[in-house]
Amino acid sequence: MPFLLKSEPNKYSYDDLLRDGETVWDGIANPQALMSLRNMKKGEKLVIYHSNIGKAAIGTAKVLSVDATDPKNPLVRIAPVKRLKREKPLAEIRAAGVFKDSIMFRQFRLSVVPLTDEQYDWLVAP
Image 1: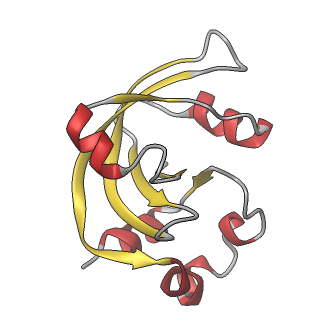
Image 2: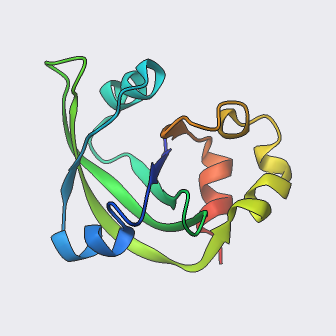
C-alpha cells in the first residue's frame, strides 16, 4: 500500500531527504498515523508532501525498513526515489476525483495518509 507523508519543509524538506540519502521518519504522535507507520512494509511506495509551506506533493520515496518493537515510536527508514516532474498542489489534489473520499480531506492534520494505487499513480503522473 502506498502512503503520503506530510512534512513541513522548513523543518525537513524533500531536498533534505535527497541530501541525506535516507532518514528515519519520526516525530509522529497521532495514533492513527502511528498505526500506519507500524504497518508499513519494506519497499512500499511513498509520496512526500510539503505541508504548511508550499502545500504540494514534491517527490517519491520508498520504505527501507520498519522496526515496530516500540509501538509508540516505530522506526521507519525511508529513502528518496525521485522528485516529481511536476509538483501537485493541494488545490489540484483536492479537485481530483480520485481523492473524493480520501481521509486526507477528512482528517487534515493526519501526517501519514494511506493512498490507493490509483491515488499514488495520479500523484506521480506528469
